[in-house]
Length: 256
Image (cartoon, rainbow, N blue to C red; front, side, top):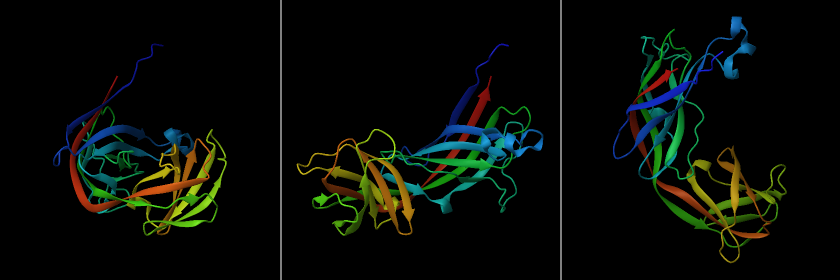
């Protein structure tokens, strides 16, 4: 049997708000009902429906999060006239949601457009129109600690921000030499960047591997390539938060 490559074409029609803010398509998933109604035979181990993954980009400032209240989906359809919007004002209606990830430079964020409906038979294009709202900071302020000894339970300050060393030791997996977990008395979305320095002011090579929110605080785990006994911490906080709304008008085409 001849194998034919599947081409996924993601086409941006128009998504300009102001400056160079824009939305681009980043992926597509369609899941039908399980084979002969058997749930365990569903594709991707996911529920029935259609998902378009997108990236929102801002030219100025840093993205903190999606602003759910200002998001709005106007059209979700295919080129066969199938309406994928679902019933309005119900759990089955199409929506802008999904797991959000912000890029390292805080200029891009992922979001998903989800529908519980599937495209019509023979459809080759999907079309979505709406707007996504973002919480964007215009600047940052840096808070710096004194030298801190790595000791579990040790509490210290960076500016007026309270931080505690929750744990320290060898990571359970991977090739890193040391893992340090810090607990911050702050929401994780308020923090733009966390940097560790040695006594001489040289930056430690570190990688943030996880974050866990705990009420109005959060814990972050960092892995280091070298052993760390003492460090100075620099925390950048977002300031001047504003709402940025980016209209989008995009099409995804699929062809063999």
